Length: 456
Image 1 (tube, helix red, strand yellow):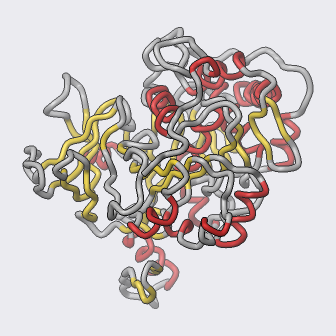
Image 2 (image 1 turned 90 degrees about the horizontal axis):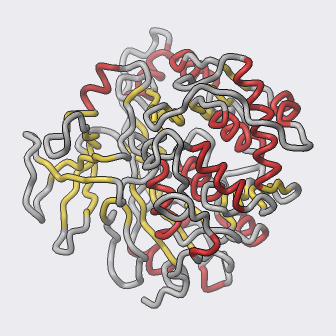
């Protein structure tokens, strides 16, 4: 395939501080800048460039930073700081993005809670996370963000690479959702690598497609405002079919992460759909050869893989091409290590099945408040330096002749439906609770009555 958009943003358009484009040196750890430092680098470099828009309003990097700093000052006054959680129970909006950056500027970790989630799940997440501050009133958040001239950044405690940056909740096999605590350590490496692999930079427009509680929304945040691009946040969504096509065209989206199930609903690109789309990221579930054949020609299409327990993406492919069959999940990012191991944690030979383990800077700290669960999934790395850990993904893979990883399925009952990772045990537990004694047992299975359309 001839890739017509294979060149990353020119080096002259990217911040030059630090060892990689867009990644500044940190006062505390030059090799691992924090989320706040990465954003500040672009505020300094492109203050008047558009950072956020919803189609009606547009905030520049300077304006976004000023709003975030005003809210950050309020958060610090209320006790937010390093390694503390701030829960954001806010709908998809520019204000939510500004609030996430405000939490970073306050030195704390943001926990996005989609207000569209069932009330019971929201309450469980908040009770489990024990946030230092909870923001759940969009009007008051908007007032705190305000408008006007920039203010001084709030005084915070020293934020280090191993402090928490964000928390994302995922489904729990025991019936209780679990919060994954991700630190700042892997963010700089991801942002630097993504700028090149996704060919993103100033002038590009990235779609906020994902639910606020889905870790793909963090990818969209990092790939945009930590790369000098504009994050487009239409107020409603997610979208499918003709509605998604209209969003892509109306907002001139150049970069988007669209799960294969949603991508399959789009009108054929030969009909002029998504005419501005230059980079298409697929992930969160298996991508078919048919979708690659339809969407790879004429744009840069990358298959990306990353469990919530890693910093956004653990492996990815190069640009995909039509006629090459089902895509692999590629190979690791520069700051990431991957191993295919047997049940005794011994490497298996190329071509043999094994469990995928992920190591390096990308590995999360663990599950919030769950030391036992953390110890079972985040294990000592026998191949790395002292103190290094591996995350055991539970995914079954094998290396092909080219050294790329082929995804073969799960080793447990976990499933993915339209990009969301689901533990059937959590739903079974909810059904038993809802039955209030009338339901003695429940079983959840995945059905595919129509090819490509899975349902629980």
